Image (cartoon, rainbow, N blue to C red; front, side, top):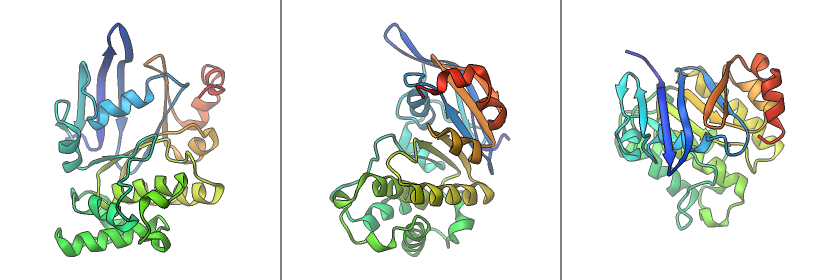
Length: 249
């Protein structure tokens, strides 16, 4: 059985336009994988195909060797696939802790269990997962505040805390540092390294080239919906085909 998330031959069309054109990638456990490319390259559409927000017209998506290509996003979440979005998707009328609790109550029993020290599933587990996810992302001090009152950077951390409280096997992060300050970005980097070290498979879309070079084990470069280059970050990001794209990434 192939562990982690694997995609092969993914195609997504919108009318006469092809947003994702034959993309294949591997997101193994214990590694951070990055997707970079210019605006309009198809990165968010690719994430939608992987996460189940939209269904690919062609190709396959496997989670731990299981074909999930035709499953909707909520079914993929129950199997251990979590994601965040370009624009943080939280419940504004709930408090920070309540938002995270939503994720904790949907736990899939994946590899974050070790890092968060989670007990067996149930109400006690949900409370414990909520508390520890808040602590992990530094959100304890705002736990009782309504999400609607929070700045964009904190909302992004809240969305990630909710995803982690679900104890996923695979985590998809769409521009996770957008809106974060330097300290928040540094803390996030530490968290992602710890999660990967604990066995989580992480895939991120990120525009910060320095952060990608620092964090990623493998980088895929997407342009016009196709993977044009893949490999170690230092090699990939120095390639002339990538440096020519990066100004609009």
